Length: 458
Image (tube, rainbow, N blue to C red; front, side, top):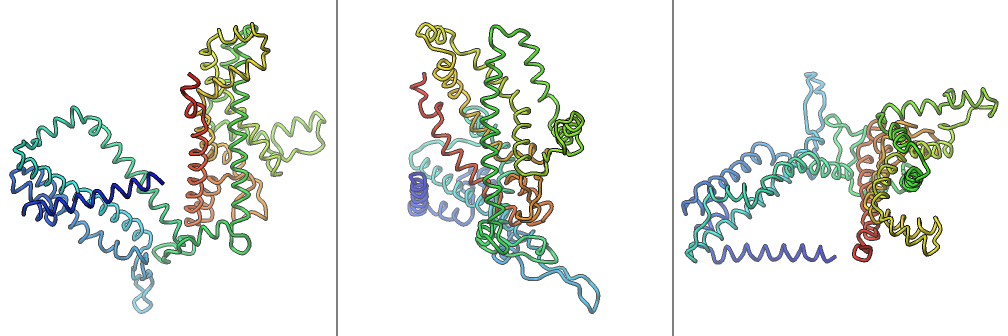
C-alpha cells in the first residue's frame, strides 16, 4: 500500500510540476507544450529541438496513417466480418480482431512512450529557461554524449537490452493478458470470425463447476502442481545433500568416480534421456518385461495408466534427474563449513544427527535458500519432465478437454493452446500461473534465513 501511495504521490507531484512549468515559463516554453522542441530550437539548441520535433512528427504520421484506425476499433475488436459476396463470388475482407488487438496495444504503448518524450521535452525547456535566468551554461550535445560514455555509461549499456526485453517480452505479455479478457477460441478465429471482449467471464469459467466450467479440472491440476513442486524441490534437495555428505566421508574412496557417475545422468540432454526412460516404464517396456520374466509380477504395472502410479513414478524419476545438481552444489558448500565447528560439537558430545541439525542444515539453508526458492518456482513451471515422461497421461473422463491426471498448469496451458485452440482460456491459465508463482515467491522470500536473519547468522 505504501508503494501505491508513493506512486500516486509522485504522479501528483509531476502534474504539479507540469503546471508550474507552464505558469512560470515564457512563450517559447508554452508553445513547446504543443510543438515539441520549439523552445530548444528558438534558444539555439538545434540538436535537441530537432530530436523532439522529429519524435512528434513521427508519432503523428504513425497515428494518422496506421495506429489511429486500430486504436479506434480496440473497444469492440472489430464489427465487420470477412465474408463471400454471393453476387460476385469475391471475398470481402472486413476487420481482423487479432490485428486490431495487437496493433491497438502497440499503439497504446507507443502513445505512452510519446507522452514520456513530451514530458522530457517540458523538462528540457524548464532546465534551459532556469539556466538562462541563473546565467548557467546548458550542457551541449557533445557534453551529453560524453556523459553517456563516461559517468552514465551504465545507461548506454543497458539501453539496448532494456529495449529488447520490452519488445520481445513485455509487449507479448501485455497482449496475452488482454487475450484473457476476450472470447478468442476455435469458434472465433479471425478474420472470418471476430472475437470480442468478455470481461472476467473466462476467470469465472475457470473456477466454476458444472456446465462449461473448468473448476473441477483446474483445482485438480492446481493441487497436483503444488504437490509436485513441493516433492520435486525438497526430495531432490535433501537426497542430494545426503549423497554429498556420504561421498564427502573420509572413509569413502574413489570420490571423483562416484561424482562422475552421478554427473553422467545430467550430461545427456533431457529430451533424449526422459523420452527413453518414458519408454522403459511403458507396459511393454524393459521394466515390466523383466519383472514379468523374473516372475515378480503377474501383469504389467500401470506406471502411466494409473494416476497415482504415474505421479509417484514422475517424482521418483525427477529425483534421478535432480539429485546430481544438488549433490554438486552441496559438495561445494559442505567443503566451506569450518571444521572447527564440528570439532567443537564433538568435544561437547554431539552426535551425527545433532551436528547435522545444528550446523550443516542451517548453513546449507542459509546459503541455498534463494536457490531453493528458484527451484520451487521453476518446478511449478517444469514443462520438460511432465511432457516428455507422460505427456500429462493418464486421461480421465472427469478432466476437461485434453487435460490429464499428471498435467501441470503449464502443460495444460500448452495443450489448451495447441490441441483445443482455446487461446482465451490458455491466457487466463497463464495469468493464474503467474499469480500463484509470484504469490508463493513473495511469501517465501521474506522467510528465507539469508534474507530474514543475515546479520544474526554472520
